[in-house]
View 1: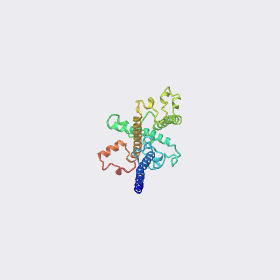
View 2 (view 1 turned 135 degrees about the vertical axis):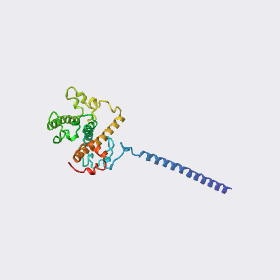
View 3 (view 1 turned 90 degrees about the horizontal axis):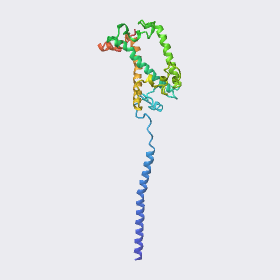
View 4 (view 1 turned 180 degrees about the vertical axis):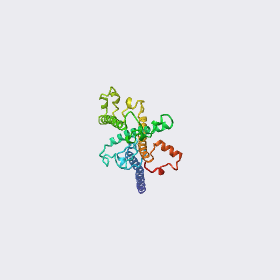
Length: 273
């Protein structure tokens, strides 16, 4: 009897020990899984600004400094001009972005102004003698044929002087934003005070209709402006090439092509006048 009691006690003790071992094992495993999961979630990297934007031939190098904060930034910079440490480091990247916006605005005005006389003349809204191609209006003195109140060379020098004055004031505002609001200018200096951002001065002269009243609409307008500015700069280049190759204005080129696409196109017009 004593032997049976001893054997029974030994078996009971073994079973209890086995239960303790197997019952604690899942607990440790679950605890380890939970700890591993928490660490993995904490190591997830944050999303960078502009990470979900459309990219145009972007490289790992260009994306290291083009983070999508600039309007129209699609990571396209094959020459590294905006890289502060690369080939374009001798020019300040902020100045390049600013210059693109300014030249885009001039190009949009120029593209519309260069083709408008042709369109208005064909529509009979202005006299035929003023409906001239852009290169015959005196913008390039030797090619100018229209008789203004002064000869084309005098007008050219006058335009250069006026534009030089405006560009000088713009350069001053770039180096010292808001300075144009402190310099006397016929009592209009308050309108030139700017917003602190030389590229988007705002105010009654540069945003009289008050576009972009909230951040979202302003961001959309900035993107549209830079896109249309880039297109206009290409259009101006096309105007120059078409004028040299065909000897007529861009609107007349369009009419000729629509009238006879086979005989009036890029391939048939490869001759210089």
